[in-house]
Image 1 (cartoon, rainbow, N blue to C red):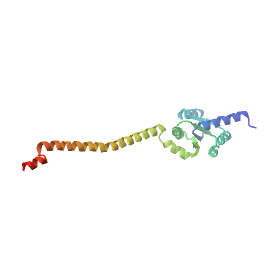
Image 2 (image 1 turned 30 degrees about the horizontal axis):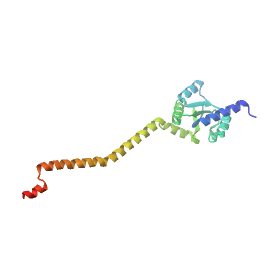
Image 3 (image 1 turned 90 degrees about the vertical axis):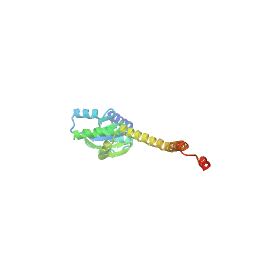
Image 4 (image 1 turned 90 degrees about the horizontal axis):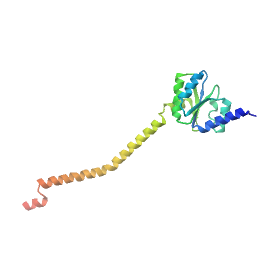
Length: 186
């Protein structure tokens, strides 16, 4: 029979998995308490970094249908539960790991899909969600402006043609005789 503390811990970890859109498993052996505090601060408010027991984490992950993390749950383990932008969390972890080699990214899961450490680093190379949305909006605006110009082009061409004909008629009426006048002059 499991102790009430362990049942409560599994329920808490399970809830974190359910509320997160991504989770990154790391090894933290060799980091000081101050460094862990700095890491938590650098991840932002949308990522919670928790040192967890492997067995309890494995049970909680399997209860929510995430069995992909089982291979990473060995040794000293901490999990970053991401509720916001996973790119921001991946960048925070990667950058911290560069400055503190004791932090090792083992792997993770994003929207139910397993991620290796290399894929998490690739995710960290992406631009943030806000930047990507801004680029998308800019491209959509440019496409709409291009479409509007395309739709206006025939009308603009028609107006220019009519204006050119009007100018030609005005110039032709003053300086050269009309065809009927030319025949009567002969």
